[in-house]
Image (cartoon, rainbow, N blue to C red; front, top):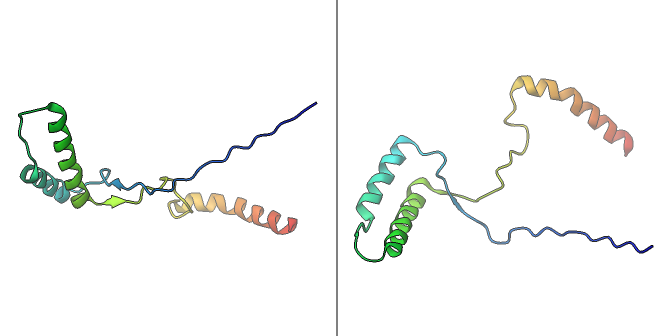
Length: 107
């Protein structure tokens, strides 16, 4: 019998992807962004629709980057226990102590 085991190697991102912080605009930022887009936009409605669209989209992206800022583009997963409430921490603590005792015992 021949057995062949293949492993899959996951590639990590080598180029960091920066994301515009669209998710949490404040009232002041929304007003600033709106004014910036209105003043800097080239809202000429003549010519090729694709070129008009690209110009408008680029203006909006550029203005949003400046006003809202950018993030590093992480995976969005919460690490650590900082987000847990006191009630959850109290319920999780006995399990963590048992796991730590078991790990120390197996060393």
